Image 1 (cartoon, chains in turn brown, purple):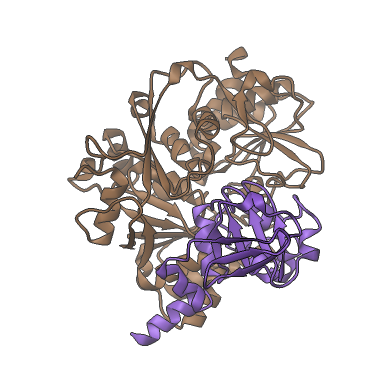
Image 2 (tube, chains in turn green, orange):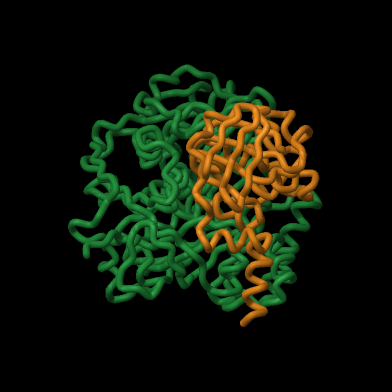
Length: 420
Length: 160
């Protein structure tokens, strides 16, 4: 029987030869990721109630990214709780203020094709770019998994999305996802999306991770990309081990996709999603001229080194408009270090960008850069729900790093193709 | 008898549990539940009331405090045309039953409802219409019966 990639992974994790969409199976979990917001502080009361130990602390990665750095006694206490828990439980894989969890996992080679991974955050699907199943779970599920090593899964259907051709100037993976949120809608629960086609094959891992990151906005359980040489090279370069059969983790010919879409990348324009939904997207030209109080580069979606490179490409030798402000929160400390070493940060700061600490920050409505009543922001983040980035009456437009940077120069939403 | 609180599609977990409230104790956080969409909800919802939504209920962040806030405010059951996967799991895990309810459009804000989660019977007293929802699958019914995933798991661990 021909199987999709997610069916193969779930069959393996459930110890079966084969699984079908709709089956409820019990899967053995290869890796757990938790962060400071939904991790230890929420786990501890449950663990106490259960009176049970963690099954295998070596399979747990803890990252502090939401409340970092502490801005008040409450956030400081949450971080202290996280650090104390890690110490008392003997958890070795702890990344304290090193970056956003979804970026930190692949930076340290934790993800590889075929794995079944549970993350305590809705953007966990980011890691699916590495050919594994990685989905978001709430903290009670995570505690149960940490104690038992397993969880129930409803085997999802698979939507296949193929992209051919090459991007024009000023177009990036983010535009693909804003386009897809409109085309496929955001209500795709109990389905996964598998991205393929020669455009995806040509992407580096950072851009592929934008596709799988925003599988969350499609409402999919996760996004997956079949591994290729690009995947394996990236994993090895980041200290990960690759199994001999890694490239066999792919959908079979004739696999039962619930839907199959083909799109042409060369026809894709830079996109902007207007408040208050990622699905509310249109070509940037429909919103050009909208004034913006703040331009924000950040989050697991849009603040990796490749994203900062896009910003630098637009800003080089130019200045941010006095009509707005540009805030940049790099996705990890490794990103910051690399951007400092290759001159990217110098271009950004010379143009007037304000550097913020690494972390989820204003994208999660916490930390530096949140919005006031009535303020309008354009951001490289993944969601723009009402009130998400601060005041309930603030408004957020979503766009690629190119478009955010071009908008920062103009003080209003602007088409990056005009300045590239 | 319970009052129906009826909202539309894509009710997100940022609306149910705003980011700025994540440092707060549940009691205080719940008082902000849905404030960006309906500032009256948290103050006026009563124990036993029913939350009714359209497609993709609970989309967005994995924050489990979203269903916890609804439960804390007294919501006894959520009926929606469809659910985001993480919210769906989280709701059962905190002991809040939720049902797929394709006829959500036939319920209006303030209708009086009786929902029997064991038989799956939904009676709208205001319109005098009766509906039957698909009963919970066994793995979820067990979690609700035990009051949530943690007590459910504790029972299993003791048996072992």
